[in-house]
Structure formats: structure tokens, C-alpha cells
Image (cartoon, rainbow, N blue to C red; front, side):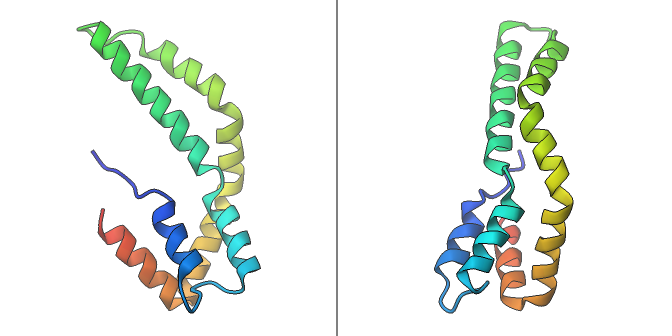
Length: 116
């Protein structure tokens, strides 16, 4: 199973690097809040859906009723996913712009992503 690195794998090095990878601190704070969006909420929702699917699979040899689980999840997650999809283009732009103009940030991304 593919496991993406937790946001902290990127955040901690950005906050503690000396000299800073992204400076000044106010720019780093804006960058992190824009790029990370509400990923922790999205991850939480995904974990809940996965747990519900696993529970349903454990209860029934023939896996049925997935539609109801997905509908419940969609109704519960609506606000977080709408916020994510609306803000994603700007987050994607800022991430790519920083990667392209900041060699130290590009190196951090390469190192963290290569461990996948």
C-alpha cells in the first residue's frame, strides 16, 4: 500500500533549518498554511472511510453496500473537500514556484519523496 509522507516530514525541516530554507518566517507561515491546506482533515476523513470499508468487508464475505458508505462519507466530508478543491490550484502553484526557484526546497522535496 502506498503511504504518502506525513506533512510533518516536510514542515519540521522547513521550520528548523538554519539557515532557513524559506525566509522570512512570515513567508514560511503563509507558504505552509496555503500549501498544506486542510490535509489533516482530509487524511482523517480517508482513515474513517477506510475503517468503515474494512468493517463492512469483515462483516460480509461478499462485499456489499459500498454505495451507502461512500454517500455517508461524501455528505460528512463535503465542506473539507470543497475547501480543498477550491484552494488546491493556488497551493499547487506556490509549491511548484518554490521548488523551481529555491534549490534547497527542491532538494528537500526530492529527499523526502525519494523515500516513498
